[in-house]
Length: 252
Image (cartoon, rainbow, N blue to C red; front, side, top):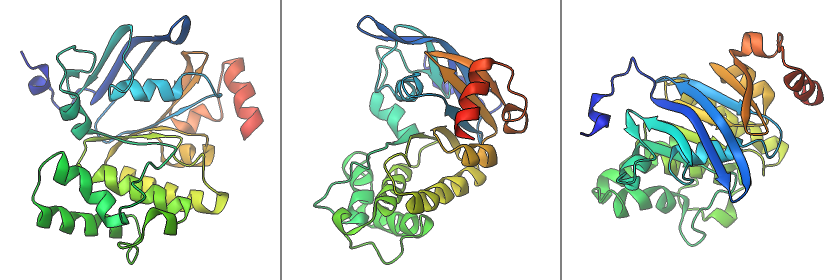
């Protein structure tokens, strides 16, 4: 039975249950659970090496898991028979490094996957790519190559490229970590607009002001477990675990 067909929007769009992940002897995730509903924006924060990036890479099957369950719209991600391409159509991901093709223009980078992977009509894809360029506020940069764009502009092209697949969920892995401070904001504005439009978003981020402003729910991870979580209104003011308090005191 294809469980994906049974999913309804009143259930979590992404459900992570008791997930364990090891790299060799190193256990990186030690029983992590969270549910993300359709249209929610969730931020995962925590010190480096706490398993944040590993967790979201498990959501679109870039990492396998040793135990537990991850479902996206009811489809078990850890199913050996999973169609990973079908999953990645539903789950877009933007990385810290933009990974744009240097010999392709901004517009061509956005168009590649829908044409080559989804086999969609080039005229339709091009029209959508132009709309996405406008959406990420890069009108006029369609013909620029990545080397001619700032880091923040390249990252916005990467976001548009991911959106070109019409995903249901967007994963953002430290997407501002490699950027200059002045270009961070333009990327965060783009993500905020997506969240406001109802895109389901899961972000690993160090941008606490952004998390406070945009997230519906914040998860703090440390050493492979979720230490504390809650809505921003209470998370930043009433953190009860000493590890959370210490982390927040260092960065706020």
